[in-house]
Amino acid sequence: MLDLCLLGTGGTVPLPERWLTSLLVRCGGTSMLIDCGEGTQITLNKQRYSVKQIDTILLTHFHADHTAGLPGLLLSMAKSDRTEPVTIYGPKGLGDILKGVLTVARYIPFELRYREYENREEVFTVGNMKITAFAVKHSVPTYGYVIDVQRDPKFDVEKAKKLNLPVKMWGLLQKGQTVEFEGNTYTPDMVLGEARKGIKVTYVTDTRPTDYITEHAMRSDLLIAEGMYGDPEKQEKAEYNKHMTMQESAAIAAKAGVKELWFTHYSPSLKDPMIYEDIVKGIFANCVITEDGHHKELSFEEK
Image 1 (cartoon, helix red, strand yellow):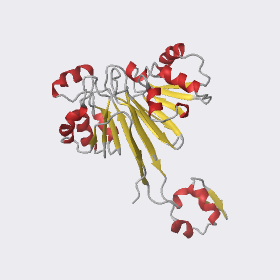
Image 2 (cartoon, one colour):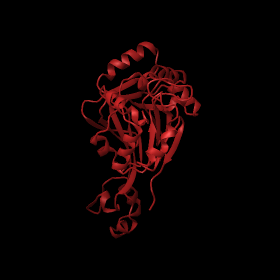
Image 3 (tube, helix red, strand yellow):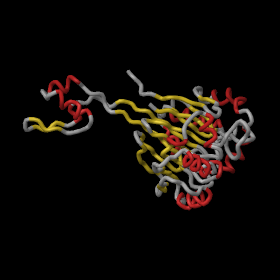
Image 4 (cartoon, helix red, strand yellow):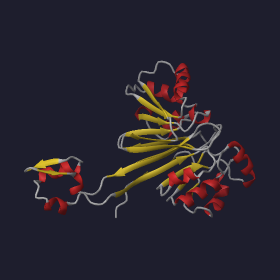
């Protein structure tokens, strides 16, 4: 299961009812943030989540509305008596950013680890999640993210019976181990059925539309994408500042064949994104004009 909560949905500056960009992702005991806008620790508390549990932070880029919450968050984690390491991922230059953060947020009692991206695409694991970071098109180096929760093939009892193996060895094979019995070698593929669909979520903001985004978002269960502007008259501004309009994000969702689209990262000038709901649903019907605190649990599909 993948538990998601948009802690903040604003871009540029916070508003009284809209905090800056941050997404909380929880899976199998791991709590991960994507971006950490100003006040993220406040919205975590408001939504009744513990800052102490966060062990990983993914940054899309280093603009302040995506990173200015780091000092406050780390200090809040320190005050919660966290001692376990925290790992932060982001574009090249992350080390320098963290030096500045730690100049402000001193006396952090836990180890702060980090990894800088070197390539256009990077793949790594966080707990049970496979993470793909991929470059997008903004005014500074910026990455989108694909979160994959993969699912093991179903154990096939009939296949196992035909091997005449002791039942106590079935569990070892199901866990991916190779076993030896009476001079023969048995591998997991001999007792497993067809591959089963996992869960896929794509997160992308602060970018112009690209085919690379569509490729990575293909057939996602959920696409969380930028809704910076809704007014067609802001198209030129979106292009100049290298952002996406709600209409452009909806077009990507339609082309990528995703199941659902959430908008986030609204411009402070976009006081009421709901006024564009009919327009964007005409492009992609299953889209949600989110607010701070929007939440959903995604589970594996059962046939």
